[in-house]
Length: 122
Image 1 (cartoon, rainbow, N blue to C red):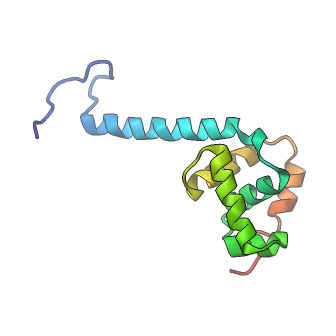
Image 2: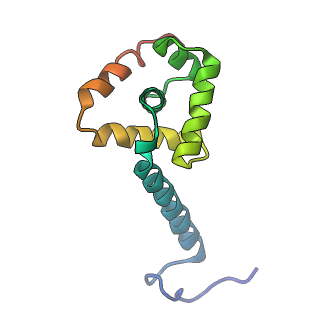
C-alpha cells in the first residue's frame, strides 16, 4: 500500500485518504437520514407510534406491551418501516424517529405515545 503524501484534489488542505473515507461515510449517513425524513408521509399512524417508541429506546417487547399488539406485529411494522423509509437498520429508524419528534409541530400526541416508553419494564 502506498502512502499518500500530498493534498487530495478537490478537498481541503490537509485532507487524508482516511479523513476522506470518514467524510464519505458521514455524508452517506446524512443522505440516508434525509431521504428517510422525506418519506415519513408514507407511513401509517401505528407505524409512526412504533417509530417513536424505537426512537425512545424501547425494545420490541416493550413496544408490544405499550401498544397492546402482538410482538410479531411489532416486527412486521419494523420491517415495513425499513422498507417504506428505505433504511436498513433499527439504528437509522431511531435517528429518523428522534428527528421526526424534534421537527413535529404536534408534540403533544407524540409525547403521549412516548410517555410510557421509559416506565415499561424490560
